[in-house]
Length: 119
Image 1 (tube, helix red, strand yellow):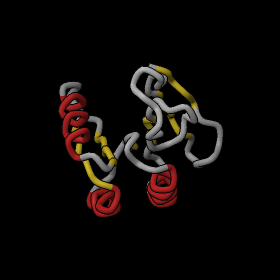
Image 2: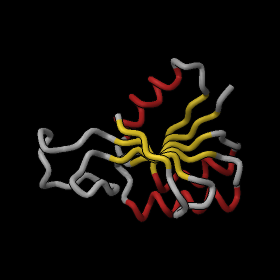
Image 3: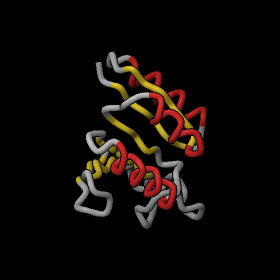
């Protein structure tokens, strides 16, 4: 069974995402940024999903922690559709102007070459 940790700032979004992933048969836990280290210390995860609600700085911080202490854990970062394509949504972008969300599968060393998937 695949063990997945979702990390984000919007608990309603995390809950909905977790429910969808559980339908695939995965064991899914969700956490806000502050509680993520506690979840990581309690058990190992095969995949950590960084939600688009995390700032770039928070996503990088939790990624570094995982890669340092749990190098086998894969990291998937979901980016919101923004003009800049970075982290948190740009408040000046309307839904009509926003590009589709993107999934970024981060390499084991954060900052290396990432694989982008458009939705």
